[in-house]
Amino acid sequence: MIKSSLFNVILLLSLLWSCKKAPQLTSAMEDSFYLRNSGADMPVFVNGNGSSKVFILLLHGGPGDGGLKYRHHEFSNLLEEQYAMVYWDQRHQGDSQGHLTESEITIDAMVEDTHLIIQALKKRYGSEISVFLMGHSWGGLLGTAYMLKDDYQTEVNGWIESGGAHDFPLMNVEIVKKINSIGPAEIDAGHHTIKWVEILDYVSTIDTANISSEQASKLNEYAGVCETLIHELYAKTEPDVGDFETFFFSPTNPLQVTLNGNTLPSSFYEEIIHSSYTSQLDKITTPTLLLWGKYDFKVPSAIAERAYEKINTAHKYLKIYDHAGHSSMRYVPELFVQDIITFVEQYK
Amino acid sequence: MKTSFFTLLILIACSTIAQNDFWERKPISISYYGHYYFHPGLKIGTQYNWRNWEKEKERKKRTITKNKSLFISPQVGFYVHPKNHNGLVFNVDFGYQKIKKRSGWYQAYSVGLASISQFNAGTTYVEGNDGSIKTKNLASRTYFMPSLNLEIGKEMTPGFAWFTKFTIASKLFYNTGVSVETFLEIGLKIDLNLLSKS
Image 1 (cartoon, chains in turn red, brown):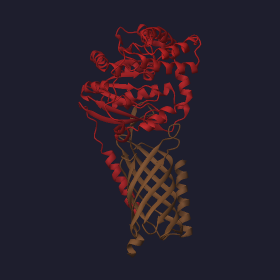
Image 2 (cartoon, rainbow over the protein chains, first blue to last red):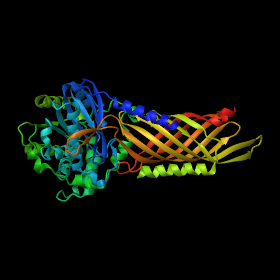
Image 3 (cartoon, each protein chain N blue to C red):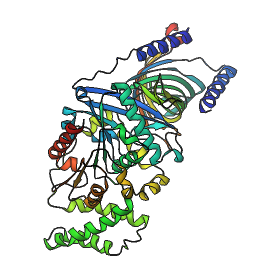
């Protein structure tokens, strides 16, 4: 009796599951799906103006952040008014789950995931949709790796990179240069003198021809500190959803997101810090928009300038914002969004 | 493999129950089952007291009598984390319970062993053998999930109690590590034997 009741309940739930409506391309889409690939189940959230038939797939930073960490910010709210934003939790990050081994957590595995998500978007919403790829920080490295693999770049209408760490060795050298170029002026202006002296002292000990992993890690930490010491940077926007609501009522689980991000295997970080794509950027022929902050110490704008020279298309644009740091979208959301809209409207 | 291990564990627990024929009390529990408190669900279960004993403590004005027991409690739960996943949990708790005979208040501390199947919310896409994208129905993954539980409740009338239970748990072999889960249950326990006697 109990067995048969339980069976009926499970059957009913299965039927309810199978009665899902087909997704509609509306101006206020709230859709989600999963991608399963190589041991990982990864959630994908699609929000915004689907009727535009333009989908911007956001490759989050970190590594270790989640896609939804970028939602409910001023920039993403503005973009959602225009286009469908696709927030994806990469493998072993965000709320992704699965049975994974270290060997399945690689840049190439995530490139394949990116490729499959674009296929899934086209299957779900129609092959006529336009897809733009947008990578921030670590997501810029991932997006670059995607653009360089096989003919994958033909799947997207455009590539938007913001503060993208697509060349770690070069990035470390540029961090040292950036600190040395801005630090002394800040000291002369009397801004946070003690901290700048400490950072400059540390930087002076580094041989840029031979930067160790430990030094790179410390440089990254100091780069983050430098950004907080700059007077020109202000009005950093915060998400318009509170922590309590996010924790208990959102589709994500912030505690698990943190845990997943903090337990990424060291082999993956080793792969990242040795990744250098600048020399291959001439293979990118797809329209490209590079959006950087002048005070991005983590991934200095020199990286973007080098990329701009190398990318092999006339349809390339570089914007460096005077009042922005590593996350331009949070410092100058309106400018950031306007530049994206201009780019997307041209190539959609 | 892990699911098989868990099934074996439940069978061993059930066979132990049968062999000792220890049960007079088999309360049925039904409760709100909240994953992270607010992801709603439902849980049903029962409880078999394996050992019962009584302990008295002399106080200045009166004697306090506590009924203590060791119990096994198999349960089935289902919850929905909207737009994330739906969880189906098969769980066995092994615990210690003490009841104040006069007031009916009780506390229970237990260790749980569970199998949780996590069904992805919405459609799941997979790559087919030919490289094309296909959908997979009812895509799920199953994890082994041990837990620690604290339960507080009160027997209102013989055979009828309310309870609340707080659980912290961890899915093992989750990604390359573990997960952190917490559950809240608020529900009723109904002892059918005692109710029918009264």
